[in-house]
Length: 125
Length: 451
Image (cartoon, rainbow over all chains, first blue to last red; front, side, top):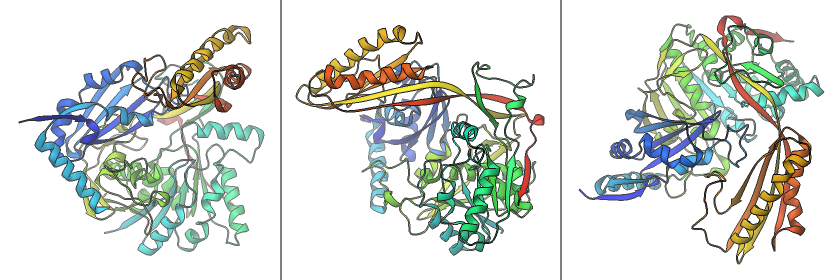
């Protein structure tokens, strides 16, 4: 089966929240068919590497198969958190889109299913 | 089956002021028992209230309290919709008095107002049973408040309160409290408490479950962003939850908005700690019933933790900021030159002015800023021409040092690279926070009727 390489943004949506110097990032597949891709591609090691310049002390991935979602918990990447950070986004609210920039290999039929799911939503709005 | 409608009219202190009225109108139109909740108390907001109260004994509650309540107070009183909010912040009694004055000003009868107190734990911090997960901080403590649970709110409603004013309280308790009151749920009914906590968690950030913090054009479209409707939870006495929103508003409620908010600020999804229950969302399922109506089921509850978390706020020095823009041909190079110039200017400033250490960071907005650390090699693929904004941030315990650093950006008007403009500088005091875990038995919530 042929794989397509796309940004994670093509198959999943995400939201970050902060508590102190820790962020969590929920990564949610647009279609159930894409959840196995998340499991295979969005690993703790790859997320640690994506955030390497911020020197995370720990990355933990929780799996939520019923929600077709992962919850990534990333420690010590906010320059001390919103109260200590000198960066513009001390909450890390933008960082869900850093996660969504990760490149992933997706089987072509899965990508087609995801695009159909996204397209169906667009029509319904 | 008995059902309670729970509306939300604010998800944070800075939320829109015109969103509560459509929620209240919808609660009335749908009929049955309903309450209205407001969450306005972020970690640092309460410390700001303590500082405000130092200068004015009548201050220290949510500054936008009256603009939030003015449009809905009459409707809620007339329709027996209790209002519950943590807008009391550092001074719930003053907030209650302000609400009573608002009612009088509007020509309404005197509402029955309850305050929930007992969250202030400044006097308990030396107790040997207190745990400091991040270490006990040095420095001057401004505020220390424990997150209370939902039962004091239920008690207040049991006394007939039409408005319940709290300070620090677990955000989901704003919804769980009225559910406990309405359905008589006990402290041991863990799955019910878990369902109520999940409903409260979904409501507590307002529009974040109805299309706010969500839209991604072409991928996740949201209709009517300028008039997003705020959420309503319909909760039944068996713990069934439907998330919906105000009628005739923008936004949307669907599987995607609800899933994002279920996991918002959750760490271990099997153990979300609250004062009333440990919530497990790993078994939660979502079903779209119809447009803007989503059923959420499967929350599980485990025993609540033996300690209550308190947020401890400390004076955190000052932040000096400055920004300047460069545009057009060779703008990236000029922005980089400005950044390098600032680096050289800030370094000696550390010692010469006050001797205080300054921490600083320089970003170039438009090359890359929010994703990066400022020591990363960044913007390598950026176009040299474009529009870039150089931003300096400098933190110091000393206001003068922070201000001097920010003024280095101002100086660039006449001493920096060509074509620099649009300088803005600011100095703001900062509040640092940490957590303490307080043994539950040391904390006694107090519920009082005012007036």
